[in-house]
Image (cartoon, rainbow, N blue to C red; front, side, top):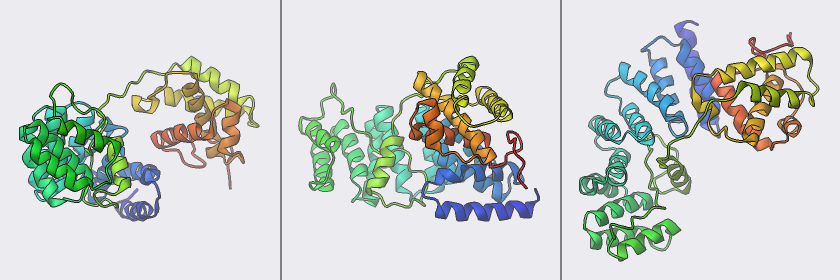
Length: 352
């Protein structure tokens, strides 16, 4: 693909991102652009930055790799430093996360999201509440209406000994609209913020990486996304058993109206999945339902590639899993293998 083609693909990606209800639906296009654009080009940097930001919550290690590619071309890119910091925080590398957030702030000193995220890591993850307070104060002053930033600021203030100020900050921000977690935080502060009973349920936002968010600070959608992103829990993965997957796939395929060549291509696709070097694709494979849902997704991948007139619900029923489980697994398979309708690697029907 020539450079002009990369420019055209970038414009297509930008348009798709603007139209998409779920930006992750554009991941295959971004993967394609990242492979075809010239290294270090504007198109490559754009693709790597977008991939890093879209993957950070679910696949922080992959997001790290893409962020580093951006920084190799643009060492002062604040968004790349911020997403690198967020991914490292999720991986438990808190010292690295702090350094990366500070680099992001050097490049964009007026970005309150970076200051908030840095303060939150220092307070919650590293027990350095006094050091966190100035950063969280700057974020709070920039966005005094954000309940989540106020909660982070109040939490750090209370742990640093400023209980009275923490009560004032939290009381002004809540005004009767706080969640149960915020109510629990208020009770904890009212008790003097006892050190032996830290507030566990509270998960203030950590992963706001871009100044181009579609929601305003404090919006419920932004808060929900941030709540999910801020869970600093390790992802437990294990390697998939090829034999178990093949057996599950064969049983389900026997109930589908597909030919022998399509079953063979499904087995080949299953082998590619099992050999996948990125274990994040196989996360949560821990019981028979997980295995069945992945087998169903692989079967549906052949349906998708060959334009077979079967719905996800029909395929899911043959594997005795829900359509929603199949849909989630198929999304992982499609994005990781960059599947397209008529994909030459797995298609058996040649369409004119």
